[in-house]
Image (cartoon, rainbow, N blue to C red; front, side, top):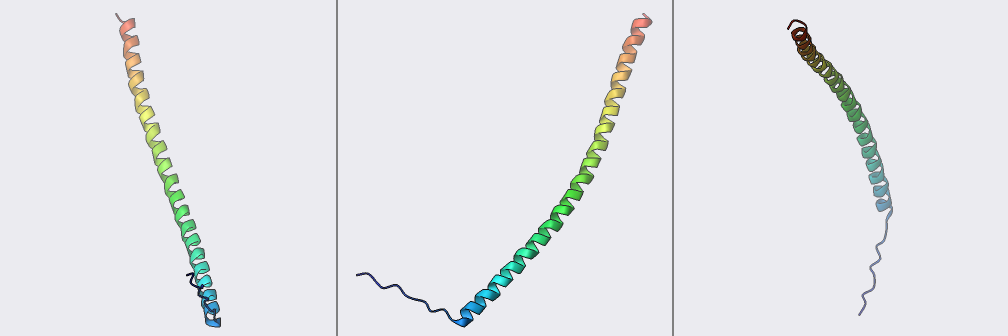
Amino acid sequence: MIKPAKIKSVTVNDINQNKIDIEIIKNDVKNLKEETRWHNNKTDDEFKRLHHKIDKIDSRIYAIAGLIIATTVGKMIADMWFM
């Protein structure tokens, strides 16, 4: 035998509570968006600083590599001249 569906009555208190819950959820979403935006800005700033530091390190490595190559090539040329 099929049981009849229970019908739930909706009261004014239920409607008001739903409105309050919806406003709370909207406020929570707004706060999450603001916090996420703040966090993203902070992370972007950190990435910019790290990128700058990495560029400095890269230029130092290239300078050292250039010095090594220059001294090696210079020594080879000197050995060829003065043999």
